[in-house]
Image 1 (cartoon, one colour):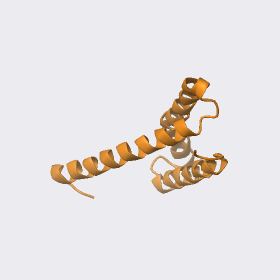
Image 2 (cartoon, helix red, strand yellow; image 1 turned 90 degrees about the vertical axis):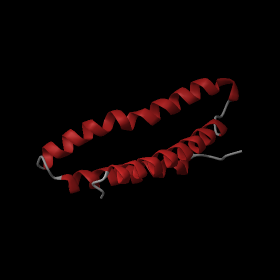
Image 3 (tube, one colour; image 1 turned 135 degrees about the horizontal axis):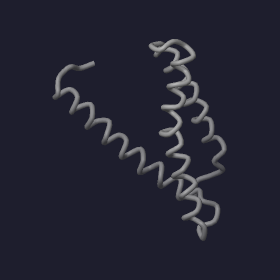
Image 4 (cartoon, one colour; image 1 turned 60 degrees about the horizontal axis):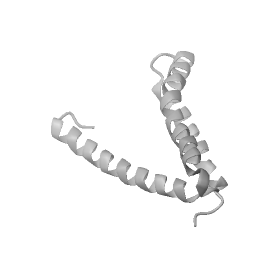
Length: 99
């Protein structure tokens, strides 16, 4: 953990570059596995909704978990997030193939 602006900016830069690389590859893979290229726009809109759902759901999960386990029980909250992350990672097993 850093307390300096330089440390924050370095971490932010690394995170931003990593996220940009990941998202670029992720979108390319998603576009490749669309079953019917004639309906690629519809499939990519479903992909976008699936990408945004965690951003909407995380605050709801945070409020529910923290309210149920005590207002500052962050280890439980992060454990729930870890389990949800692992469950979401399992979904890659359902991707049939990449051309």
